[in-house]
Image 1 (cartoon, rainbow, N blue to C red):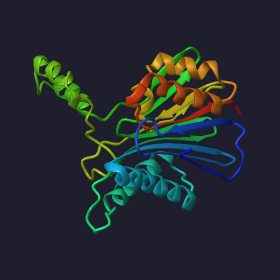
Image 2: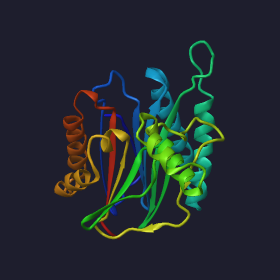
Image 3: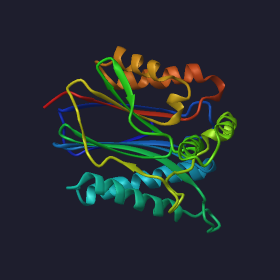
Image 4: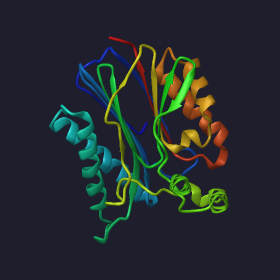
Length: 263
């Protein structure tokens, strides 16, 4: 399974589960990572792009940099850490070369959740997603950094007409990324400045687009809640059902689940 685990110490506040499948693709460009110690739990999902070698190397480089930064200096100010490590991940992915020494021109999405005790911060670049399941509701916490987002903002500011927006939003280009790790200074980075206070029983879902392009939010919620006694089983159910509904076009699919069990 394409998940890197780093457990420095047990953290009884959280139960973590994960699953990653290649889908119907010929190669795997997703990578997941999670870290635990006595106070902190961190999870990251990256979805690489740039051909067979490019996407795999980009997602691996991004997570290697994130994990290295986390190990070298446990952050006091979590939002600042997330912002700075995003810049380092971006530079590292841009620096990747192919066998001939040319720029690899690869990239990766990245979502990360950093929990300290019951305080949760998150980071998002690209179109992987973070959901919070609380009670009987599922809430997407981040936004997709794609052409659709750009169109919405341009419509809101009056830069484009409603007619142009509706025409463009129906095209396949609406899902094209406008930000990712490896794009350089043009990237959009969403980092929470204030934490979300977790409640006992809250469940957090980090996933690549292989999940939400095959399953809607209600299906994700139902599958997690129906299997909430074991986060690994719940994660496996999510990827299995994504593969079932995605059929022959199923993308690489990775999910990390975190259940907050209280202090």
